[in-house]
Figure 1: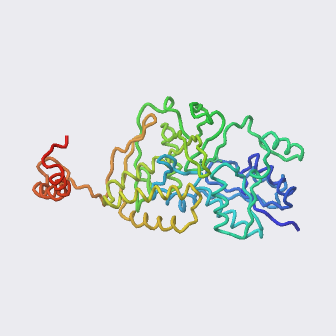
Figure 2: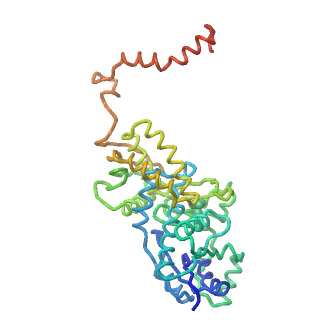
Figure 3: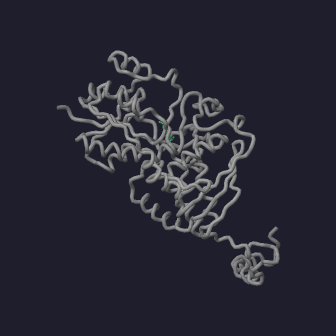
Length: 402
Ligand code: ARG
């Protein structure tokens, strides 16, 4: 009996062709595994097709809730955004897909894992490093990195072997979608001067088509995580799904950026992340109200490192786990409600309240309820400014500095 390989299968052209190619070129029996993170794919159809195309076993796994609870929850606490913009939908999804591939490899007694990543992207790194970390004895095969066929050659290869494929007319863009967002690359986007065509967007309306009336939503947080939307207690996954709809309908959630890939390439990326951007904006607003100043400032530095670890395929790492513990300990007071207004492509935080708010009306107000000790300010400034006033006395000898 042939050795088995578990293939990360999407149902697209590459991974459909890979089922036959892995048999022909490496002698493997292929176990196809499709992991859905809520990207709206038709898994049942793809799984049936994998069987017809010769997979010895084929499984579809719906991991959207697990994605929300085990991965996105952490990303929210960390306000994880890469290069100040990208909320990491694809990057966060890869380690969970890897986890399911490795589990299936053990269950099916497979000796290897295959994925459909090219040799130019970040995803190959996330798959390979993830697999090596979780199961160092599994071999890794990346057919697309090896076979160097063009898209046309793949279609010819499939035709010659009667591989059943579902070729989307003129597939122009490379798209990866899950509940945290969608990444769109390729086609005319490869010229950074080109404005994205309106019809590439899957999750968001254009500003022109967005309703003229503003729309409001209230997110309630406990320990740094959304637990209710407009007063209705919901699972994190359901809150994300609802916010994708609300923000998306109002034209909120588009990004168009040049990003630095781990492999050194600068690439033009268009993203849609309506719920991700909404939740992180709200979460930050609640942290502004509830985190002590130095904790908040230090957290910003750690957040940036966290986003880099996720982006660079280092999810299964001691530093990522340690940073999660840091964030967890800072989230115990991140409780309360954030009110948001969506309007014609804009998102604004318009209200915040928290039982753990550090905002003190008596300290902040300029009216007669003021409790701030104004005399203490003068003494404080005396000491705060001491190093500079002494320096000026010594070296400036009465010269004016301006
Ligand atoms: N540039 C993004 C990332 O590295 C998105 C990658 C999207 N992948 C894709 N196959 N379209 O996370």
